[in-house]
Every structure is written in structure tokens, then in C-alpha cells.
Length: 181
Image 1 (tube, one colour):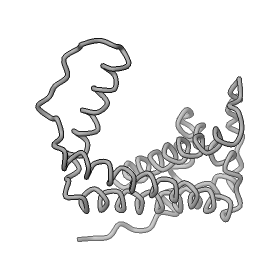
Image 2 (cartoon, rainbow, N blue to C red; image 1 turned 90 degrees about the vertical axis):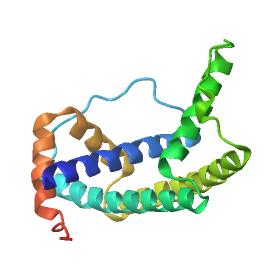
Image 3 (tube, rainbow, N blue to C red; image 1 turned 60 degrees about the vertical axis):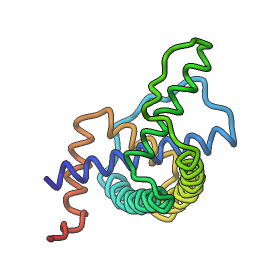
């Protein structure tokens, strides 16, 4: 269904932007000690602007996902194997951090070549993420919004059903028609 697809895509784009922007902000200034309450008093004009910007941000995120997949596949890994290696490394890291001799599933242990490919693809993905984050911030600003305001509306969208319904309705009006295969 189109609504579900666009809602999911909007949520993903916002979550990625939120996470990426938070990382960028954390590098520039200390984190606030208290989160601001979310207001839901948004004008239709501001929400229309938000949905236009969100669609642009979503396009950037979809492009970044395609580039990330290409980077993984370009290193002769498939997505599932890349994720298995990431999970294996996380399990090992957790075991080391806990200083426990917990058994780690070695059936998914990467070969030396796979680990080299994983690391190279991971570096490419980090570069893609950094460039995408910068592009997203530029797209938000070019759309006439402050990144902080975009974030605030995105958070409210995630937390408030009435606001989510308003934005979803606007997205349906603005979203391009799905392509038929």
C-alpha cells in the first residue's frame, strides 16, 4: 500500500537523518541535558514544507542505500553475509567488553579475505553516510527549514498519531505515483 510505503520511507529517512544529524551535532556542541517537549502546533503550511523536504531527504536516503549495497557487492559480499560478519564482530566485541569467555558462534566467522572486503565496504559506507548526512542537511535548509525544526517535527510525527495522520495525508498528495512494472 502506498501509505504504508511512504510512511515507512519517511520514518526511515527521518530516523537516519535524526541519527546522522545527532552525530554531527555531537561533534560540534555538547548534548543538551534535557529534551524539549514536543509541540504539535504546526501549521498546514509548515507541514507541507516538511513533507516536501522529507520526500527530498527520502530520495537522498534511498540513493545512499543503493550506493551502500553497490559498495558491499563491489567487494564480492552479499548483504546477508555482510550483516553476518557485522553481527559476528559485534558478538566478539561484546564478549571482549564483558571480559567473559562467553562462547561466540564461530560458524559465521569471516575468512581473512571476507574481513578485508567487509572492512573496505564498511569504510565506503561510512563515507557514503557522511556525504548523505551533509546532503540531507543541505536539502533541509534548501527547503527553507532549519535541520533542528525538521528533527522536531520528525520526532513529533513518530510520537503523535494525529500529527502522523495529517502528515501522511499530505504525503499522499505530494508523493509521486508509483511506477508500474
